[in-house]
Image 1 (cartoon, rainbow, N blue to C red):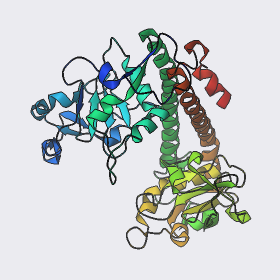
Image 2 (image 1 turned 180 degrees about the vertical axis):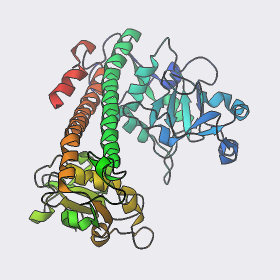
Image 3 (image 1 turned 45 degrees about the vertical axis):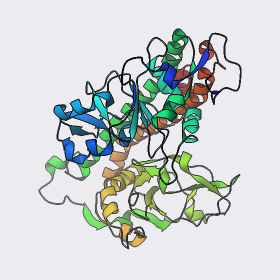
Amino acid sequence: MAPPHPALECRLPKDWAVSTVDEIKSPEKHSCVAGPFGSSISSKYFTESGVPVIRGGNLTGGTSGFVDDGFVFVSPEQAEQYKAQTVVPDDLVFTCWGTIGQVGIIPRTAKFPKYVISNKQLKLRVDPTRMIPRFAYFHFSSPFMVKHIQNRAIGAAVPGINLGILKALPVVVPPLETQRRIAGILSAYDDLIEVNQRRIAILEEMARRLFEEWFVHFRYPGSEDVDQGLPDPWETGALSTLCAYINRGIAPAYVDEGGTPVINQKCIRNKRLDLNLARFQSKSPPADKLIQCGDVLINSTGVGTLGRVAQVFEVPEGATVDTHVTIARPAPGVDHTFFGALLLSLESDFERMGEGSTGQTELGRARIGGQTVLVPPTDLMARYGQIVTPMRSLSHTLQRANARLRAARDLLLPKLISGEIDVSAAPAPNDVARDAA
């Protein structure tokens, strides 16, 4: 008798069933196995090329469920020792130690014909006569199922699941055609998110390359008439000359309900600001510490996140930053888009500028403001802004659309998988994206 499914708050449709992983795995040998024993796949076997080894960084959940990059490799001969742990398109991979709840699916468009899982992962190949692989992926990557898996972890210091726990996990099994339609609906959301992400990457690359072309290589409009050397009236100066304000944020009084947003270092990643990771606090910040559109935020404490940069495009009312984040605000007359691009180009410099002992490294405002930069004429800054600001605006619109798409998908997923919502009633992802624009 299969255990109750964690998502079920209503009666299943009459032609649906609840099963277990052990019952829906493929009948072939090695369809549900643990990774190789640790010492048999250690770094001494890694090579420059060959068969890629999947590690934790290749499993993210979310849209694709698999990052097809950043691998270590083993030779084809060594990979023969891991036949049982070899995965191919449509196979599922679970993290079994560390970040429990991560699951990925090898896409049919994968770069390699086969992969090997690491010693911290589990493999599952489903029986295609009982379950559509993509449906299985959505089932196991859903928030309620991730929580269900995490609640069954063993170990204290490093949580984990074993093969027995995986095989006992409950699985809702609709008819195959229903599975296919559910997977199609959810994949449409993920496909649109992926398209938007590619568009965002292209827009950001265009803005970065134009900045380098104009302000690093000096190939800006009219530069063909300029002699060698620093163009006139360009000058070298401190970053502070372009800033109206450089300072840290407040020491927040956090609250569980109400309050105003306070941005922390977790919110600043991949040159973007994620306001969903902000916390809330009850203090009234000084007016100059309220973030403004065009401000650039710089992580300024600790190792690992120090120096990360993101520009503010959307300002929640009353939002500020905590004491681990520095606000750099452009001076009057300095184009906001140019200012953001300049500080984003300095991210690697900021990362190296920290002072202090390990774990207590600080990036002070004096070091930020004292960073030497090339200062172009304001009309060239403005011209860059005229070209790039629409790109930045579109990129932000696409990011906002993706946030709405993810939220809608995550809300829809458990309702589809439990049968609470019929597939014919699911909202189309294009409608959700259009509402977010």
